[in-house]
Length: 258
Ligand SMILES: Nc1ncnc2c1ncn2[C@@H]1O[C@H](COP(=O)(O)OP(=O)(O)OP(=O)(O)O)[C@@H](O)[C@H]1O
Image: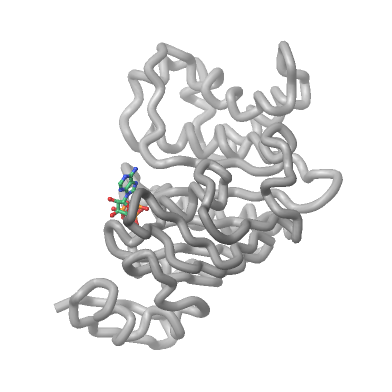
């Protein structure tokens, strides 16, 4: 479980996050929603210890992140940042192997190679293994990064959970791969020690796949809970300034905006 308690983050005199307390449990797809500029990426960076809040703390299984070493955390927590770009002409399998860097010192072991191979198979990028990463399309690059981050936490940890944090993972993906990726997350969650936290913009995909949602607006936690609790007309109007039409039937929940 990842827990934030009373996180406040300011830049100069601008408050980007105001008193955010949320909980992301293992075995669930936890999604962070909110309009542009709401503070989603900032919250992700605070959760990942890339930004230090002025107030509040982040806990992984009850342990304050400030008391955990970067190296130890990297063995159990993988992060897909927004706009991950590489400038070097590396082969796809070399990019995926970067995910294993926290686990080996000089050369990857056979266990690392196996994780790379299996993560590439899982995300259907094995056929690209020897291609120059820079020649891939945007969507293909994104799938390579999925394999990279998931290879990082491929094996269960000896003591506790594994964590996968994804900032806008669906960018660059066509509708087929968006659905495929969300289904892959479901498949990964068969491993009960996995905590998944992601930022997405597509409210209908969130309604379809999320087990737990949080909605940020102007740096504040507007709502947290099930899709019914979060994706209601009042919250949608406040966050997105649009009038929603919400259908909720046996096929699921769908939102339209007028
Ligand atoms: N270094 C910075 N200096 C000044 N303002 C910043 C800085 N970083 C972020 N902000 C501001 O903080 C607010 C939240 O940014 P953040 O990137 O967390 O939003 P977001 O919800 O992820 O938005 P988007 O959906 O557009 O990606 C924005 O108004 C942004 O301009």
